[in-house]
Length: 276
Image 1 (tube, rainbow, N blue to C red):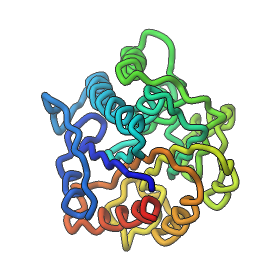
Image 2 (cartoon, helix red, strand yellow):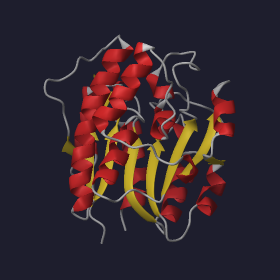
Image 3 (cartoon, helix red, strand yellow):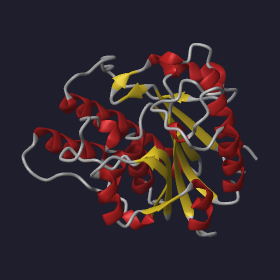
Image 4 (cartoon, one colour):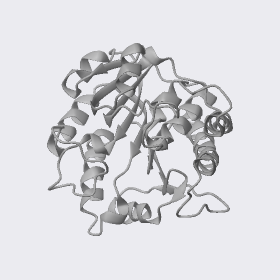
């Protein structure tokens, strides 16, 4: 039986998000809390400072993932953003267990760099960072991005090993960059067919892939015409036939989830995957 080791990181873009700590009250499973000392501010304006905080945070995650995976556990992380994938991958690499395939579920592409982004939001860049797509040159933000990757200790994942499922909302520039990459893009319905039966799979689930505003009103960055909660649970039940060696989850807006309705729904879906 696989032993799941659940790790909770209550941060978003390196900033404190204490509301995510309520996961430990909502879920019946124990979650190990990973926190930075000294703690970062709840609001950080400078993107360079955000990247420094992200580097510290996900270096901490990488060390814990390496220890857990090396001892035979399956690490499962929940954080406020998709940059957590860098810590998860670094930990798996560090203990000599890199995945054969990465299944990335997301309504967005997350494939911007500083030279292509219009929003200047780091949350639109994690998949690009994950495969080593980072701008060269003297821009302090690009230099800070490279320093963040170095602090985490992550090596780029070969893009052909990544299956990006859904990504129904892509920006100009991002769309063209994905088309030019070796990343495999597909619909959620086609995702299972892209996974080999013997592959060791690392799953990243950005909860905003779901389109279910009634049941899950506090999801981030809602994009219409996506799978609902029941669709996601059905997909996760089918995914249990594969060897899932690690799972990371990018969370909802905890500050907008006063009744924990979205948290409860997301955790129920996650447990559909994790429980026998």
